[in-house]
Every structure is written in structure tokens, then in C-alpha cells.
Length: 521
Image 1 (spheres, rainbow, N blue to C red):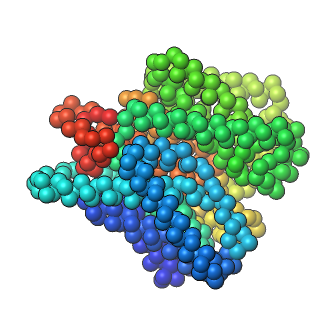
Image 2 (image 1 turned 180 degrees about the vertical axis):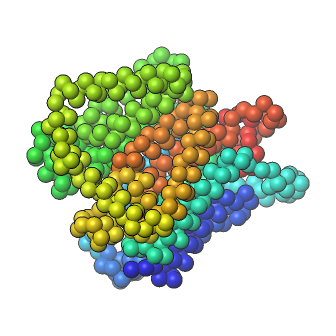
Image 3 (image 1 turned 30 degrees about the vertical axis):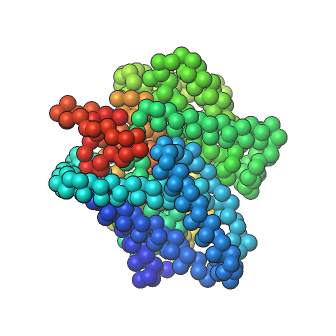
């Protein structure tokens, strides 16, 4: 199965539009390209599922379809008006709803989509586009030379290459859909994840991040974490799951321990967001000066850590440890971080020896594969797929289809290791882009991460996401990756520059120029 010319054209239009939005300096071109991408993405999905049962019912009920469209437009318009009047509402809302998925029933099937996040992104786009274009028109009228000067000024080379790597990720993914073994999955990944998250990244980089705003985002993230943790504690007490899944239910019946998943189908996804929240709280505590606020943050962290323990997500705990070690390195020194890492390794080794876990669960490859929910076989199969087509892979989104056809019958879409998934789907071409993106992102975030708690939280959270994706995947298609990178890039751009002339502060809701660094946050 390969993509039709219409499908490939739609992918190029959606991903290409998002790529142009990342690279364009002219606000008209940037927001125009983002608008094309945001319109092309749902149209692409609609074309892909046009004849499926889940969409036929909606097509045959025009009144319902119109009602859905009208309700969506009204919601986007209302939220955009709110974001325009209350500038801090957009970034706080984006981070608050980042992990929330809403069940949507179509044609007798239920899909869990990031509807709240899509609403925030769409409303934020409308608000920012209106504000930026209005400001450009006002500046062009009052001082035509200033607009030309801004457009001529250049971005820092490091950021320029990072933006290029992000754009290349989108464009390469679209091109490699041409020969994908699972075009539908590639379309869904692009339309539901890559395109809207790229637009969200653009919006977050243009927010005027202040310590107060960063504190509001942390409060929203911590509050959402407490709600998710409350659901998890209820599940553990009731020995029941709010969202049940066959293999998880079976696992809970077979083992002495009971894994919770809160409002997610997968305990590892639940653990991932708790780990990110804990890393952010850890960064705040490392820089905290207010003893009372620090005590509250520590108490919240204790609650979230307890919920994380009940998820029994080893991957999430590893991500948490990695993130906190980065915080320690940025706040104090690399020596302290290495010492902490060594202590954790020693304690872990002692635990394995004393408890006998290493002998019972990891004694053989078969036992280890069972313990890790079959990930060993997925990794081996992914490596075999990558060896078969080392240069260009099996096509975007094709891992599950290629694995099922050429390795063994299994229901999966990823290898549970992002680099292996990229190697199998996109070959060396995709790996080069992936490695370039990761390296550039780490250099940018870590080089500016020691300036403040906010910058450290963004850098450490990104590292935690990277570590988690090495054994669970979901890197580029997770909104947290793009959100953390967006905040980190904005804070990096706003670092004090000795040779820079302090910029005018402007009003509280103004957007900082894309092509100039403001003097400070």
C-alpha cells in the first residue's frame, strides 16, 4: 500500500505549511502558513476516513455535522477573545490541558483525542495572528522603516538550525508517506500530532515569559497532577480502573501489585506526565527562596511521587531521575549530579541483590521480555526491519504494519524505543534528522538552563521526555516535547545579552518580535 497523489499532496500541504510557519520571519507568511496547515490537517483526516463507518454516520447527518462545526467555531472564538483580553490564559491553559484526552464516539467506535488542547491551539492561533498582524499594520503605518529593519535582522545561528531541524522533521515525514506501509497511521500522526504541535511551538515561542507567568504554569501543572493522582489513589483503593484495558486488567489479576493508570489507558503515559510535573517542581525547589511556597511545592511533589509509585512505571521513574539530575547539574554543578547518579545506581543495585528481583524477573531473556510486556521482541523486530531497509525505511507510520507482515502478527504501532521506530520507518534519512534535532535542542536548552528555575525545568523536562522515549517512544508525537522546547527556546532567546540594547517593555500583552531578542524576561 502506498499513498495516493491526493494523500501525498495533503501531507505535503499540512506538514509543509507547519514547516513554513516555523521558518518564516514575516508574520503574514508565518500565520498564513500555519492557517493552511491547521485547515489541511483535519481535511486530510476526513479524506482518509471518508468511507469508514465512523465518518459515514456523521456525513449522513448534516444537521449534526453543522452543529459540531458551529459549536467548534464558537468555542474557538470565545477562547480566542479570552486569550486576547487575558494574555496569560493561553500558556497556562495549554500546559493545563496538555495530557487530557476526551472520548469521541463516531460510527460506534470511540477515539480518545486531545480535544481540549486542539481547542487551545486553535484559539491561541486566532488570538496571536490577529494581535501580530494588527501590530505589524500599526508599526508599518507609524514607522515603515522599523518593520523592514526587524525583518532584516537575523536569528541566532543555533536557533536557526534548530528551527530547520524541526521543519525537516515535518517535511521528511510527509515525503516518506509516499511509500509507507500504513498511510492512514502516517496521516493520523501528522494531522493529530505533528502539525498542531508545531503550531503550538510557534505560539509558545512568542509568549512573553515572565517569572509570574512561569509560576502560573507550574501551579496549573501541579494542580492537574493532583487531580490525576487523586483518580489513581481511588483506583488503587477500589482495585478498579477508570479506563480498563485487557492486558492491564489481566496483569493486575496475575501479579501481587496493582498498577493504576488514572485517566489514561497506559500506566506509562500516566507516569510520564507525573514525572514531568515532578521535574518542574524539583526545578522550582532548587531555586526557591520562599520557605512557605517551597513547603507547599514539596508536599505536592510527595503526593505526585506516591501516585507515580503506584503506576509501577520503571520508564517514568528513570525519566524522573534523569530530569532531576539535570536540575542538580544546572543549579549546582555537574559533579553533584554525577555523584547523585552514582548513589542512585548503587542503591538500585543493592535493592536488586537484596530483593532477588534480578533473579526472578530478569533471569532469562524470556522472563525479561514478559516483564517488559514484550518489548524485547518489538525491539528485535524493529532492528530487523531497519536492517532490511537501512537507507529509507518502510515509510512514515509504518512500523506496526511492517512488523505484522514481516516479523510476526502483533497489534502495535511502535517498537517502544523512539530511535528504533525512526530507523525502521524512516531509515538513515530519518535518523539523521532525529539526531540533529535532539542534539540541537539539548545544546540550546542546556546552555541556557542554569539561568532560572523556568529554563531549568524546560531543559530537564525535555531530557526526561527523551529518556522516556528511549524505552516507550512517543517523542515527536507527544505535545510535552514541543511545549517544553517552545518554552525553552523562548527563554533562551530572552537571555540577557551584554552587547544588546535594552528593548522597550511595551504593554503586558504584547508579543516580543520574532527576530529580535528582548533584553530580559
